[in-house]
Image (cartoon, rainbow, N blue to C red; front, side, top):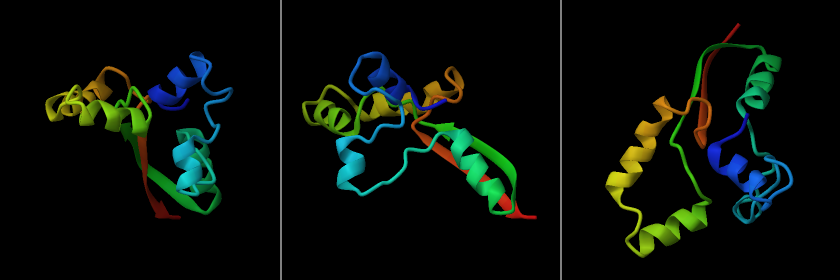
Length: 104
């Protein structure tokens, strides 16, 4: 599964597939939008044992939309803290994923 904002974009018809590249991905030359399964597969295929994995920060909108909301004062730092805390209610939907691994 992918992050909340990618699933929302798909369900809203903004993208066809949650792995479609955004304008930000293109600008930053990011060739892949990883979900946890993809990332785990690559890490394991490279001979690592996964010790821990997870995600954080429920991001409801794209980077540019989030920046716009901050610029106009609608999205505050307190709200950003709340979005970080929301992960406990929405596991596996965070916009940032991580894996802790060690070589086998």
